[in-house]
Image (cartoon, rainbow, N blue to C red; front, side, top):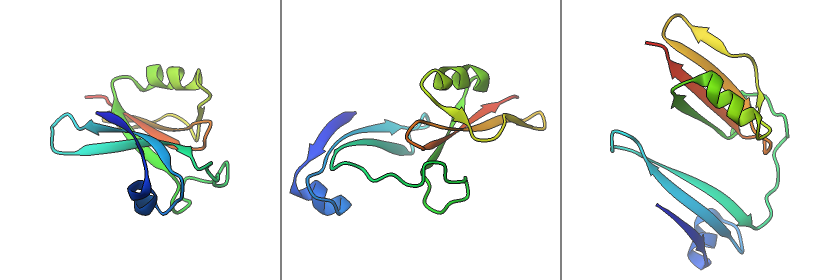
Length: 114
């Protein structure tokens, strides 16, 4: 589910003042895990280095298993995403790539080939 969160408890939790954020919690297909996604509306965010390399400590990165890397890559490019390196294939097991979105967040895409 999703919600907007704000108030003193949120400020205390994240160590910022005047927080207002939207959150969504997504359950993994097996039902054993959850991922929380958030977008902060306030306070105004401070950006990290806009093109920090992949091995920078603390750089935001998340990887998704997708049905077709090329199709998802085309859709993300339409929204301003760029490849970090190249689409690579690991044997006959996976096709893999990393893309960087307009806000600098790196997303990994993995397609299982078997």
